[in-house]
Length: 452
Image (cartoon, rainbow, N blue to C red; front, side, top):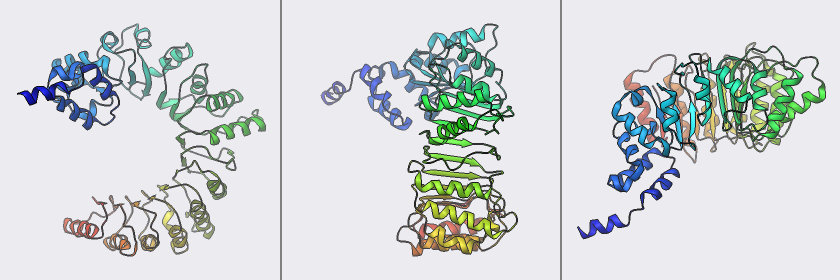
């Protein structure tokens, strides 16, 4: 008894427990800590959070408490939520019955991510703007929220708004106007589909202002051709602001030839994702040339390129140029996704370029190439390359012999692959073949071999 009492006295007071938990991002660590505290008195105001973890998945409770229909509708869970909501630093609203209820219990310092439909009282917008919303996700189901976001933001509501995702069609011009407003804190803007025809002078100025005055973190949009009234100097200022902004991720979605200048350097983003639907070989060479001059860029993802469609030798040269440029850049992750004709290229020529890359992660997924020797050339390149540790070849036409060749590349490496993914082959493998391949991967020292 004396030892137990002594242990109890060494526990931190409840107010300190709250502060400790605020610094823990991992849900498993948080609930292990609350468990060790042992009693409701020791857990203090976080006792309801502990009770919730006995009823729901830990990951849905921390670091962001997810308000789902199951949680809000269940009387026991709802009482626990009401008691702990003010202590939660982040709340994700996936479902809610009453805005009044949410306003009553949410804390003023809480970061509220809104993904739910709105309960539709006539005064919903007046109540909604009182919430401490930091992010909004507009889907086709709740797209009427978009008008509320635009009106509220233009009137200075949502002063803490940092992120907006819009999945249905939206005006790029309207969203850039919101982003560029005075006092804007919008650092994440994800626009899946825009309905504007051209980039006007006003839109261009708003984009430049936002990109150069706010610490933008992520930006996804559909590039548009410039209106003829946008002069060359303003276009150059836009390209400089867009490509040299030190953001984490820039995604150019549904990219088509819009007269973009790929000679701007250094690129400022950490990750660049381009939908290359109509990206020309010349554009790709321009991009390759600036990679060694862009030390901030760590991940490059090119989606839906058409190199190889006409079996042109020059297309192989273009990809070789890209791989060669990577070897003298800081890029550690290269993703070539959904290139319908990737395997039409001359992989015997590409093999030495791939071998000399300094990549750590290589992803060639969803390319559905016809059965050729491309996988053998990739395996040969991996034999002589010790930097690439993670390889994703999922959703390609790989036979058992192809996969065995990839697994055997580890025999010639001083450092084995950490991950090889070959899931989604066009022809399913028998269970005994999968067992054989898993055993082979384990024997070769590959930590994570994925085949389904």
